[in-house]
Image (cartoon, rainbow, N blue to C red; front, side, top):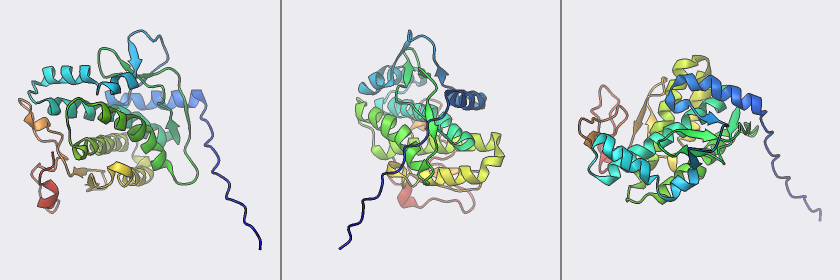
Length: 254
């Protein structure tokens, strides 16, 4: 009887040259504040993102509550997490879609006095050749960062809300990239849809147009702050034409 040799493990992705990572980040930064990540520089004024996650970024949550007048703790926590998700997804998605680079955010830093992000050095690797790019990006953003932030929150926030925030931030980043780089449309749409069926992002919402408009199945609670309103992708927002979400999906979304 012939014994079959075990399949060889997949080869590790090739590292991306630091100069290429730096160029990709610099190219994406003009798309907006969420796309900007500082690179290098002194450590003064920065802390490991993991230190912030250990407390659920409570200092930022408190600052958000004060800024928006959010009297309910989970509202401030949701808004803070949504903003952080946007600051993660935006540069990660741009580098992947425009340059085929998976950013390395293992040593991510967060400003001690705000939400800005920084990495000590420009690191990353080339997109895997086996079609697992969405899974690689999910690991970088959700598993490595958003899961840890969620675990550290000092106030109870529904998982569906938090991962709905993550999906909303992803879709918003994709739309911003598409507006700036329409030639990326096909690959960007496929990658975004793949991500929205990966892990805890699956079932959080759906793409509703070729422009990557998104309809989530939850609500970030921003409408509950003074002067706030429902976001365009909110499950509670009034629908028009035939883009109506089933009432069962909108029920108890928070």
